[in-house]
Image (cartoon, rainbow, N blue to C red; front, top):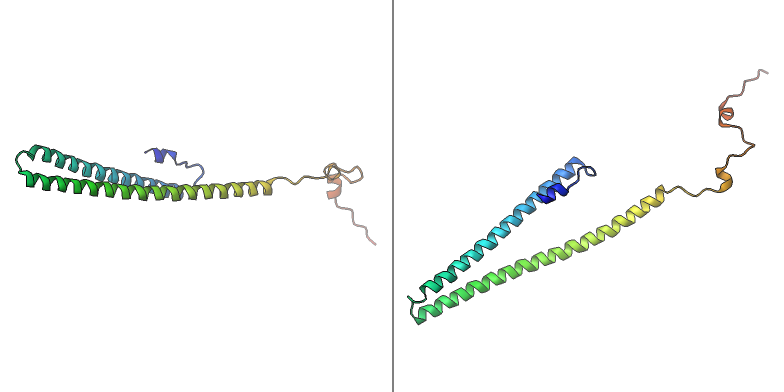
Length: 149
């Protein structure tokens, strides 16, 4: 919701604004799905640990060992999966940051070039002051009468 408010419609075309809003909605949906998956996986692990704690007295020593090894394996898989997700996100963040820095430098060069093009060229003092010998603009625009020969 915050990303939708941040998109300014004053400087972008309607098509671009719609595209950015669609992208923001897709990213928010993806983030929500990722968070749901994370919490679902974590809650399943918590249930398994709780179940292990409750049933530990009912199972013999060999069964306890198998249950504990199974839980350790599940926890290791969960940690590995989350580590991979973290590394992917970190790589995307680095790439995004580098891209933004490159674009920022490029836009600043573009703005500086545009400013230099629009900046009025300095004129010499004699060229900017009207000459007393030149006729006024109205007299220069007046056509001369034709003479018949």
